[in-house]
Structures are given as C-alpha cells and as structure tokens.
Length: 93
Image 1 (cartoon, one colour):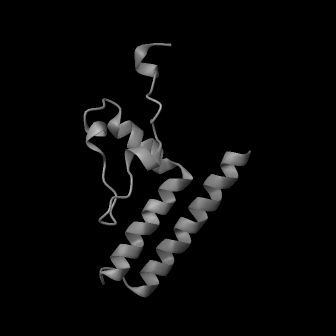
Image 2: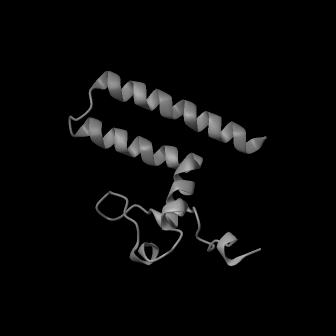
C-alpha cells in the first residue's frame, strides 16, 4: 500500500471533519484545513448516511429563514428521506 492509499483515522468521520459548532452551524476545524485529503474526506463523509442529516439541516435553515417554501421543503425532505433509506439499505447488504 502506497502512502497515497492511506488515510488518517479521522477520514470521512463527519463528527470530526465537519462538526456542529456552538453557533449551530457546521465548520471544518483548522486541523483539517492543512490536510491533503480534506476535499476527498469531506466528500466521502457527505456520501454516508450522516451526510443526509447535514443536508436536512440546510433545508431546515433555508425554510426557517424564508428562503424555501413549504412545498419545496417537503419535496426536498422527502427526497432526502429516500436517500437515507437507500444508503442504509445498501450498507446492510
């Protein structure tokens, strides 16, 4: 295995690479900003079922701020629910 094939232990762990901060928003820690895997890592984390939770947070914030109407929110949440079900089903097989 080459050095490029190795990832740090925190790789794609959403609670580490994109944690919720005290302000109620998610922020990438400074320690991740210098990592050569930061983009690949965050993309991999968002592809997991926990990434759906982050997308739901974005939809809920947009709805709360008035940037999204009721039906658009409902449609997006329904789509995210399907994604969550598909990702969980796929991880058990």
